Image 1 (cartoon, rainbow, N blue to C red):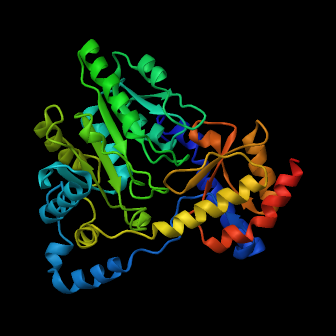
Image 2 (image 1 turned 135 degrees about the horizontal axis):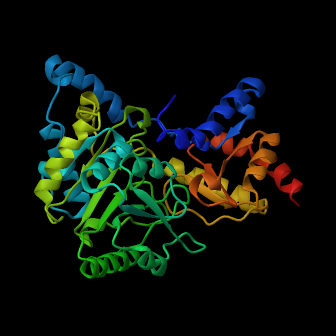
Length: 393
């Protein structure tokens, strides 16, 4: 017997993970080079060389009881200071170590933030399509997800957002660059969203937060930029992860930013640090924190992802499939040629192509392809995509 709260989650287990596991089975059967697995956002780009050097240096420099011991629940102060200074340099902010809480990845950060600011029964608005595990995080704290619409280019429908805000709303969860679409919300859009929230705060007499999930912040293309939301809306908490920018998804290291301008910021900061412990993380991994300090300016090879983006986009659109070209992250969100995108994914597996159905992102009729694979995989998949396209004429 498992808990009643977990039963629906298990019944709707992650389709992304399921497709990934099916891919492993297919690779054993047909050979890895003959399977074109675009299912999981698992970076193929190696970690920057600074990461390996940092590990070696830290093991030589640090005393064991410091490196592997407990620290403040918010993380090492020198690490948080390094993160704050880097943000000040790149985002035009004025943070100190106190504004930073090191977390077990962005997912850990989101859970800590929700535990800090949300009461049972309150609502979290999320624009479709979105990373469906957000539903689970909100459910952890007995909240309710409210889905808001986007336009055909996956930009927020601001009228729908305003209509969805009510006396139960507590959080607007934003993900830009977006998983699964690669869409970036412009500065103009962020300003309009901020205006709506400021207006609604006054009307409802309650605090409304933006929780910005930004693990893809540095993975942008074609001269696009990701605006710093905190510069436009004070009640913003940012969750960040090094999973993508340093290619360290399995190391679970990230941070929360809680600005001084946020309402009752001191109380929120102290509560979030406490929530880090109560949520079961206790503190972010100590070795990874030390690595972050030494590699705070390092980045994975964005040009590699950009080459993949262009190659896969050109490949599938040349085959006749419809797709809005992504501005950031490392995903394509393509229109299924039939209404049942799960059937389309099933057909694609006949040609050893593995995609994730859009219903896994609250948007049926689409499929997601992660292009954080090897460039050679994309090139090798060309004939398979042509055969798939021919089947749908």
